[in-house]
Length: 339
Picture (tube, rainbow, N blue to C red):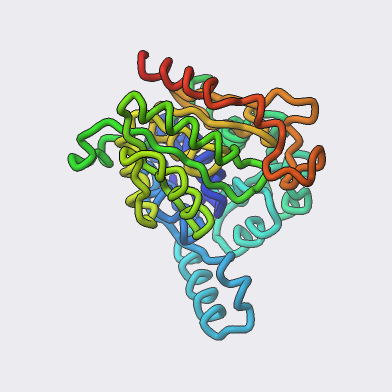
């Protein structure tokens, strides 16, 4: 059985789809998946053994250059690649108009969320098989239910299995235990205060733990350098590709992060981790897996799901994060290490 998945972005959303692929692979021995995904995340689906082919798409990049000849040349090549195979089923696991439009060009019966379940209701008009899935469930559960209905296999009640073999990313050069701090995220409201990161780093380095810091832009690099300034045991890594980042995460002893795609990747790798949730709802989108600790703020307006803080707009950081102190995080780290 050949199935095409449409799930283009973001990193967290792509990772949330992996357990549904694993479920189907275990239930239907003959099944193989092709997957349409944004070019920046094209490596991720290939880590699951039931994914045969990854078809990269560049919607984010194309939108910035709609009038460029190269954009339309690449779009035609993508559409041609999409139509090379006749699929038994095409599953739009995103439920957006853009993903539904992509599914339109693929050959095969279309399946996706129904009008009341899709993130953009109009997307459901593109599907022959419309699946009803509750919106108030975790994102991973929603996709697992979608695949279960679309493929006609029973929904397992097991812990999500991402299908990623962490051992393939082990690297002998990471021979000393270390922590990774994931301090960067796009939403300003998801940022844990910088002085909290510095205080947590001081607690860790005082006990001789090394720390590695990742960054994705100049602002995050500057923050990482300020955190690292307190101790030679803290290393600011160079800007890394996803293939190198996954190795850094896979070999870590503990990862502490805000709600970002790399925190979900950490969970998929089965690395012990603590994730900090301010405006986001850990019940609906928390990083799921073994040894994953969620620390959610305790505040009247949380989770607000807002990109900008309306409780204290002039604050450098949302005041809700004062309820998750470095000492609280450090105690959870100690629990993970001892277990």
